[in-house]
Length: 141
Image 1 (spheres, one colour):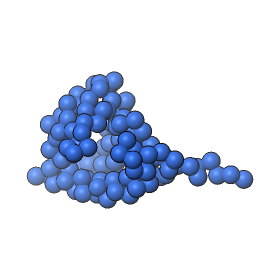
Image 2 (cartoon, helix red, strand yellow):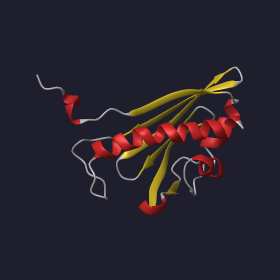
Image 3 (cartoon, helix red, strand yellow):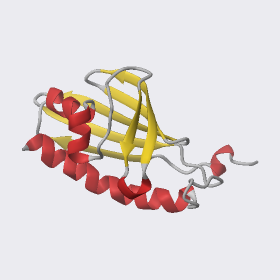
Image 4 (spheres, helix red, strand yellow):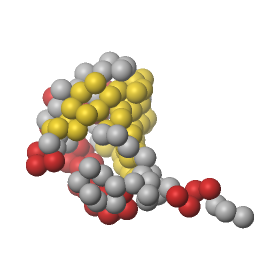
């Protein structure tokens, strides 16, 4: 029997606990200034349906759209044509459990730069490790 999931790649998922209150972490992931401090320059607004761009430097500006917002617990947005980024926050009594989910990987798809999702996923998986550390340093400062 064919496994219907054989044509999908697993989500990138990283969970960590920050020594910072949930409101501070939310401000870092759900405001334009916060996102710029650890991720990329942007014109994000925390409004459902808001279309914005992440400025990915040499890769240009990536179109994004807010698809879910539930302060201070959950934010999702579409990134480019294939991906969804989700930030989940859980209040742990003055600390915050933060989960990043980067979904939408498809081994049959290629980015506009001609790279397969598999190659990009492997790079982004590593990239997110550094970004989540950077976010932690920002919110714990």
